[in-house]
Image (cartoon, rainbow, N blue to C red; front, side):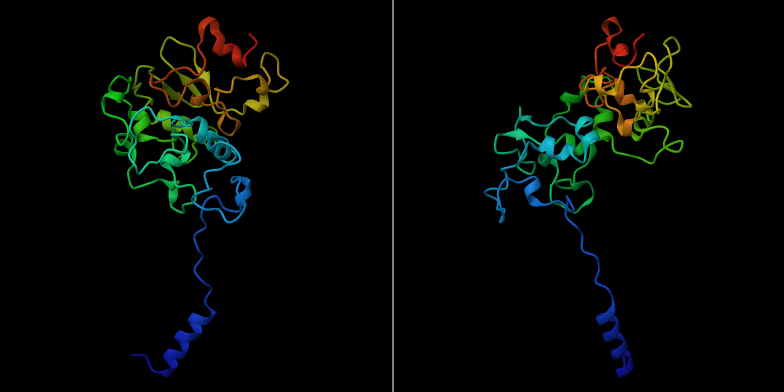
Length: 255
């Protein structure tokens, strides 16, 4: 047991040490009224009354996650486990899988991840018919961000794509990584990724960014694998816009 001087020192430490920082619940620094219609107090009975849909509200900060993600905002077509609640309309929403006001990383409900999480709602047959048997979807819920490559020249979504579609030519597309140019196969034209599309403004033969189809995602303004391909699709590698008559190419280029 410490003597009197030791006790005094412990007391001083306790009195003058700064308190441990409290975990701030998500979303931080936002007034309740920015999302909730009800005035304070907000209760379980009125919390569902929102100023807009969850997809619109969440997209204010998480635009890419909304667009490069599991679809939401639609009625559940199968029985959903009680631990993943639908909203008052019966729709699957962002809060089906995420605790909106949580503090944990990713705000995920429960402890399931990857394949185990997907199989909570889907059976194995749902994935078997996909070209990669759903591996890309099961492994990357939102194509989770990774460390930037090449000093940020290539976006994190493309990095995740190339974790499988690498120099070994894995997958039906046979995508290869060569600097910031992707060769989809030995016989097709290579296409650059990683450049800021906004920098093409005013240049000949490029359409203004405002004219692009909303399905063409530009993470951080950069051309990406998910610009031309749907990241979340039953058909792996599906184009964001059908390229019949080079329609996809004409989204950006005035050839």
